Structures are given as structure tokens and as C-alpha cells.
Length: 326
Image (cartoon, rainbow, N blue to C red; front, side):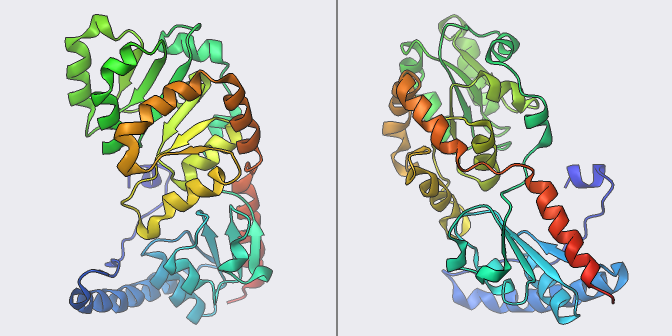
């Protein structure tokens, strides 16, 4: 909601929400919102007059792409995950092209429509690749020690932060150093604990948000992260060994399926959210000190990398736009 307007693009919201699968009687209101959203999408499309409409999943894509298809405007879907969501599976019937990031997506979509593109990532990560030495100096860490990056998104991840807070003694004794992005919600709690014991944790750099991720990735010998599609695409391109802890609070358990797509090819390690407190830190500390395993993970995760994804998707969009003469 901040970055898009800053880039010069308007955001127009739709009054849409998902179905409540636990309380079916509440879905009468959802049906009304769907109809209202389609009506609003119709007026937006009439006003904007697009040559092509692109959906990336999520509630708002449903009424917008369905309405566009009914109006004869070509649509394109970008499915970021290894397991297609309900919205995209429904929209795929009328979509002209479906851009995917994982093999085997023909089990969800018409094979003739699929284009393997990968997921777009932050361009500066590849343009400004930072050496490990430079990155370690940036964080004022010890170049002789292995470094683990723990990152749970801008808001933070409760499980990852809880593992770190409850495992501080284990961290102190590990001979491993950490860059720990807590997210905004957990920063003050972590900061207070560390500041009160600052002499005991020189191996621990704590921050709420990392603006220059290229330095964090450059320093990291191992990453601990949730399993969002965008993050995984970055790890693949940068050949970073990773332990994935999928969020259990994601629709259709997409993150677990994303993680397992890599784990099944020995391209990542995986810990269930419910088991992380007892297993995660031990596994991370053992893994980062195992050079042979790190090398194997780097080699295998690189096989999932897709370069120039944004450009490839943009070309597909442009080709579809040229077919529309409305």
C-alpha cells in the first residue's frame, strides 16, 4: 500500500474476502461482496480500458479477471506457488496464459497455456551481489565464524522469534553468529533482552527490518525463513542454503507445499512450525557447521533458479495485449 503509490500507480480496492470454511452460514455476506466486487471491477475496466488483465492470485484477482474475461479482454495468471490456489484454478479456465514457477503444474492447468517463467525478485539482489567479506564487515561480525540469517518478514514470525528468544543460551554457546530480523512486532522485546545482556551476545545482530537484503544474504552461510514463494525464488537465484519453517496460517497450506517441492530434491531443509521450538536451533547450528551439506544444498537449490522472470512475464503480457483490439 506504500510502495505501489510511490512508484506512480493507483490502488483501487474491492470489497472482497474469502469464504469462511468453518462457519458456512457467514458466507451469505461473502456472496454479496463477490457480486459487489464484480460490479466495481466492471466499472474500473470500462474506465481504464486495458488491453490485458493480469492476476497473481488472491481474492481481488477473482472478480477482476472473471469480469475482464466476460468482457472479451485477454487475461494472464501468474501462479507463484507449487500448489495452485482455488482462485487461480477457477480463473485458469478462461485465462489465455498461465505463468508458473514450478515444474508439474499441468496437474492444475491446461498444459498448452503454461509458460515456465519463475517468480520476479528484487532486481537489486542480482545487480549488487555483495561478497561475504564485505557483508560481514557491514554487520561488524567475525569473518572466522559461520553466520546464520534468521528472517521472518517485515512483521516478523512468532515461531522464529520465539525459538531465538528461548534459545539464547544455546546461541551463546554455539560458536556461530546470527543476523536476526525480528520484524516490527517483536523488535522491542528482543532488543530489551539483548541490551540487558549485551556483553554475552556479541555474536547476535538484532534488527527489526533489513533494508539492504543484499548485505544480509551476502553474509549468510545459512538462512532460516518462512517458505513464501518470493523468498524461495530469491534463495534459489542466490544459491543460498536454507531451512524452511512454513507458516501454518496460509491459505491451502501453500508454504508447506513450496517447502516440500525443494526438500524432495534435497534442495532445502524443513522444520514444521509446531516442532520448531524443539528442533530448529539445533538443526541450524549443526547444518551451518557442516560444509559438505551446505555445498549440497547450494548446488541443488540453484537448479530451481529462473533468471529474468519479470522480463519473461512482461513479454507474455505484451504479446497478449497485442491480440486485443477492443
